[in-house]
Length: 258
Image (cartoon, rainbow, N blue to C red; front, side):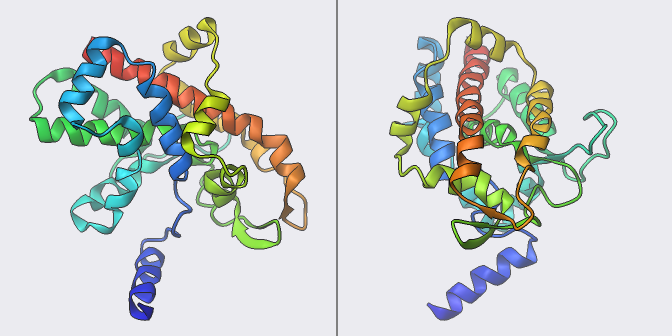
């Protein structure tokens, strides 16, 4: 067990990513999937069952993180994020070798709409889509190019050493001690106008929204000690981004299959 733990630590360090610090945590992703599950059209829901079998969008939402240990999927390591420096747009920003979250989502949607995929490829793309729509709504997945999406911003969360990315991915959500269905029940109350507006935005709009929250996200005390106040100032945004991701994921899947 000691050697297994050492191997896991060295694997993640070698890939320049810390465990549990590169994505919405499991609760966040599953909440996004659960919200989307409840907003699918009848035709889309039937097709999701055809493709995923007995698994729900919530249940497959973390698959893309689970496959990181498989070298066959290393090509997708850069798909979880994109980099847009301050003052730039996606179009003017340097492009990530191997693709990024915007490129990947646009590619996956086009492939799903093409109706040319095998069932296995369709299932894989749908699993990718569920995860990446969640990722792009986490503000620090649209990085500024300076601190690896907040991974290099060292902070304390209630006295425990961590980094800013981890606070946004997992720690604020986990501190509420909700299951993903409980969190979905709390946040899943969009108005009809919000659903229409959110679903009409493009993938690149989603990224620019995440970028627009940088000042708020990076407003931290000089001592780096975060606790109740930071959560109070930011958890409404966490809830909003999770809800928007779920609503938009449903909109994309409905569009693909309707």
